[in-house]
Image (tube, rainbow, N blue to C red; front, side):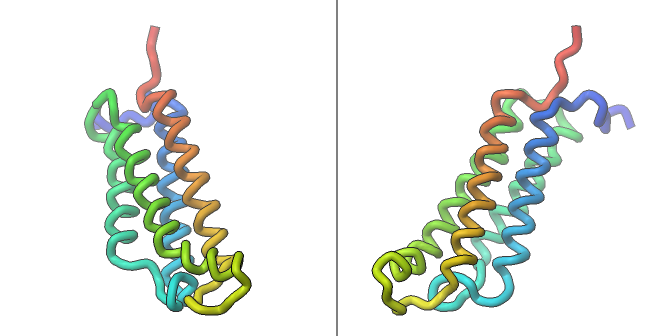
Length: 135
């Protein structure tokens, strides 16, 4: 397995993997209990984006490309947008002290924090690259 060289990967590759795991955890928690707008769960859009992020985070194991780190970062930002879009009404309900939309503010806040951390990890990984530099 010449193409599967984990020892040649830099810290950026592992940061992308950690970000993908955080998004999987967010998806797993958000898929139960109806924490979002109108007591709903994450939809197919979030599932597709998280699966794509995981596949793109693992892709540098199989093929060398200079800009691999940029693709999981884009997916993590899309997932942050999905969480913010689905949770904005819940946040506004909390700020205005009304119960109109349903949902759980604490859950939405946790999802925003987890996806935000995943985005930051992906940004840092973009600057580090996925391949270790050899002299």
